[in-house]
Length: 279
Image (cartoon, rainbow, N blue to C red; front, side):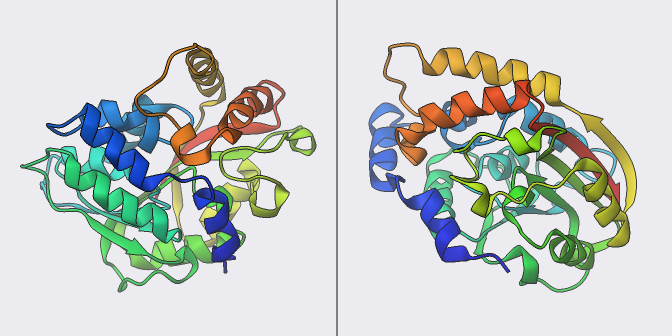
């Protein structure tokens, strides 16, 4: 099980939810677009483009066959992946252990104009004990969320349980690199090693197979991730006031977090991978 109180404190201690909503209402009175929200709600390495690639992995199982394929986003955060999936016609359910994120996710979604998208569902809960029946979903997604979960084996077993036969699991995840001992903190998912539960790629794929998944695709995105993070770092150092940025969530800590991400990627302390597996 995850120590939800300490983890929530990491993510919520500088969260300015009311100010975020006021900022959005002031600058985007007609409702923000998904790209306008991206600096806030795409809190992973790679941004919108990485989410697009992740969702494209679902195309064989779903969007073209039915506009209401059931997809579970585990560790949904502020909902960037959920809203982008809904725009494709997917029936998105987002689970997060941090209630403050789930509440803000819902408030952000209420401000986005997606009249033809299926309705979203938000659940605050623990991925080690998913509050869903067996065979509930066509796909399960992880995007920079497994790294906060100390019992990956249990999470993957639960993921397999709630997937229908033939269902898909797709991950865009951070894993440990060969120099993980040199990992610099803080990073967005952890202020220290206490809440960083990185697995090596070999261990992660072994756990997936043990949970009953068949590996269909594994790709190292590290080089692309590093180039993207370098570009973001340059933007973050530009002396202008962005309408939205990760600093609205992490506060001034994010300046150090962003620098550490570049260093950790460049020094092979971490890797970024894409994995697709099926039941």
